[in-house]
Image (cartoon, helix red, strand yellow):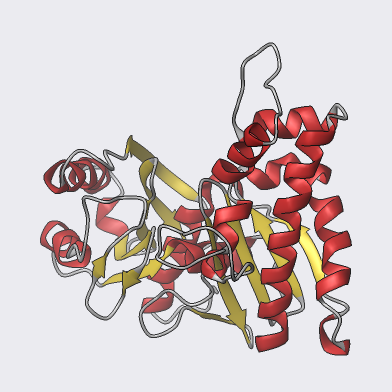
Length: 314
């Protein structure tokens, strides 16, 4: 059927991915490039162009009705610009204008990567059918997005729900965002591994010193590794409880590389949440792992494209 696809772009600190996505959230064409985050603004733009070139030359491109972009943030959806914390060569970069130059008259929508993941989980994942949800990604950074009243709430600039930069330690260390003691400074995969190493944890025979290595050690009973995940869980619980108290959510969905630790993360997180989510209207808050996987950013970006066309997807 003609005109029944949207193009999606997912721009993050490690990869730039693109896809053609149908109205059921299926990815029909998919491509990606590494993110040259520290090379130059021109190299970043070239990588985006390479992804777009593959999409626009795909046989089904003539069926595309809109383009949705989910980008690491902060973003400014009104201005169409992005200034990702983890892509220092882009500051106030006119991403939407650049994409429009390459896709012609198609409408282009921009949202942050956190709202994109929320859109994906509400459309196709663990928050499907829920009216009020917080959906998070815990990886090299910590991001999030909100669904309120059954509708994605991305805010005026496309950044609403960015839980990674809620401060949970007033005397905590400086965050790249400029704040202190942000959830991200404690609970991101990078900082879980950093804290474990500083506390004396030693990687196993495989030498894996990442959060995945810490998780493997925690599953094997290493007390220092377990303590690093318990610390991260405490920060996440504090941020989730604060969000629930503010906007009343019924479920918090967590994805990203750190969430793949499974019970190593979710067991202490649920326990810590009972300490922080104490008000009656937040005590029943459900915690669930995300189900849309590594393509969540693309599915959420596609949802933004469909929403721009008036479709009820997320």
